[in-house]
Image (cartoon, rainbow, N blue to C red; front, side, top):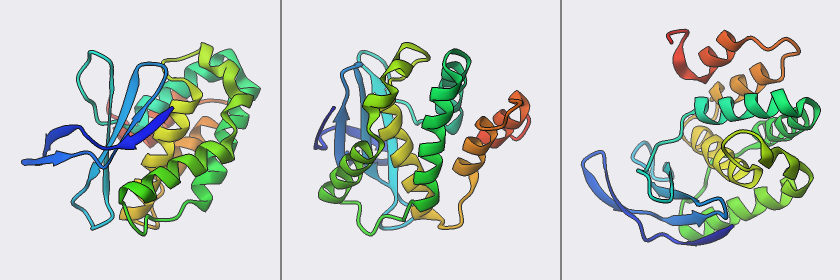
Length: 180
């Protein structure tokens, strides 16, 4: 993973924006973080795979990936989800969304999570663990920055940790509201 000063331009909500940071991964994915408009510290997270269009990540994207990992390596994936849930419970809103703050945020969570112990999960699903940690860190921080009492991210994690997985509950918690 390499984090650099943002250089990606994108029209978002009618404005031409340049990313604050660009995060490059060995799996040909790049995450771009832009200035949001909900608050002064709001961020907009986008990602793309080399040669494909830029997307806005949704909770359902990482939830489906974790479901695939759960099917292959249940206990290891559950441990990973528990670690992310712990991070969610301790997540704080951004005090600043400048380049230095975002790089520090990403580096801190990658270091805390020690992705090497979950490396086997890279063999399942679409995303590797390092990408997931960074993506999920940015999404949970975005959610908490915009609303400290946010709960959607946590609800998805809790749904994924149920002993008897309920695909409908997971889809609903991920934002589909039961409509799929």
